[in-house]
Structures are given as C-alpha cells and as structure tokens.
Amino acid sequence: MKLNDRLAKIAKEIKIGETMADIGTDHGFLPIYLNVQGISPYVIFSDISRGSLEKAKSNCSEQMIDDNYDCRLGDGLGVLAPAEVDDIVIAGMGGSLISDIMGEDPDLSHSFKRFILQPRNNIGKLRRWLLVNGYEIVNEQMAREGRFICIIITAEYTGKVYDASDKSDAFFEYPPWLLDHRNELTVEYLKRESEKEQKIIDNISKNSSNAGSDSESAREYVHAIEQLLKELS
View: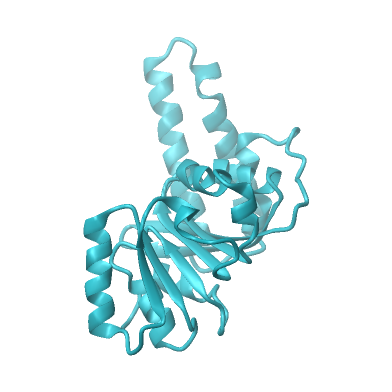
C-alpha cells in the first residue's frame, strides 16, 4: 500500500513499536499501513459512521496479515480506555471539533503519549487551544493533497500552560514556528494564504461602509504572513 503525501507524513510521526488509534478512520488506510509495515504492533480503527467502519473492516480483512487490530464504532476518544494506545491520530476534521474531542475528557486525553492532528479549518484556534490547555506543539508539517496544502500538528501533553493573553489570532494562525518546520511547501502555502486574506479585504472594501474595522483581522493576517515571507526571503 502506498500512502498519499498527507497520510505518509502523518505516518512518519509514529515511531516503530508504538501503538495507535485512528479516530475517524474512514477507509482505514493509515492504520493498515502502519501495522503491515511493522511500525505499529497494534492499531485501533474508530469511526462514528457505521458505513465507514465497515469499509475499514473490509480493507482489514483483505490486507492485514494478522489480527493485531480492533475496529470500534463510536464518537471521539470515548471508544478508548486510558493509555490504551501510545498515539492518537485525528485527521480530516475541523479544528474546533478536534479541540472538542480532546477536551471532552481531559484525563483520558492526557493519558496518551502523542496526538497527530490534521485540521481542515480553524487551525489557529486549534493551536491556541492546545497551548493554553497544556499541550506542546512538537512538530508541524505541510503536506499536499490534491489542490490543497494541509497542516499536520504533532502535540504532546506536558501540563505547561501557555499564556496567550497578549497574543492575537494572527499569531496562532500564522505562528513564527512555521519557519522552524519549513519545507518545500511553506512559501507556496503562505502566498496562497496571503492571496486568500487579500481577497477578503477587497470584498469587504467593496461591500462594507466600515471596511477598516470589518477587515481588521484579515489585515492582521496579511501582515503576519508578510513578516514570515520576509524571514524566508
């Protein structure tokens, strides 16, 4: 099995010998790959959708060479016992939903070694939530998936709460540590984001009588992106 760029980069965050659970597994390609490649000796497939879980089960029966896995129908982390696996993958969901899943039972979430998260949106809100709730962001990656560039966040619970009281939304949406984890997609991603925010500013300017205040957050985002691109030039 060959993974796409997004799943391949998620897989690299899981170390040999670590067990894992894929929350919202859909077809189950990632846990199958990790187990078949000898990376994860035990994997858990979980999905709230019975149809998706049945697809994962079918793929397991076709491709898994042993029975070191479990498929569970359910919502979020509630399908797991504390510390049952090392790593949790939550990919392809909104950032707000991911933070809700992790925040529903903090003690349960804190029992796992590592979270590998791939939010579809609200990335800045997820970063803020992680840091103010005692998680350390230990790595960020960018991966291409079709016409999109995805952000992959690896976080570990340390209990050290980050003071975000003086930090803007722009700081978390386009944080300085993106430069620490830059790759071949970083400049393209930032330029795309700048164009997106500029379109928002232009649309507000055309349609709002309070364009200055209404477009303030987008202007802050553009400024933050420009600062990062300046550092990269």
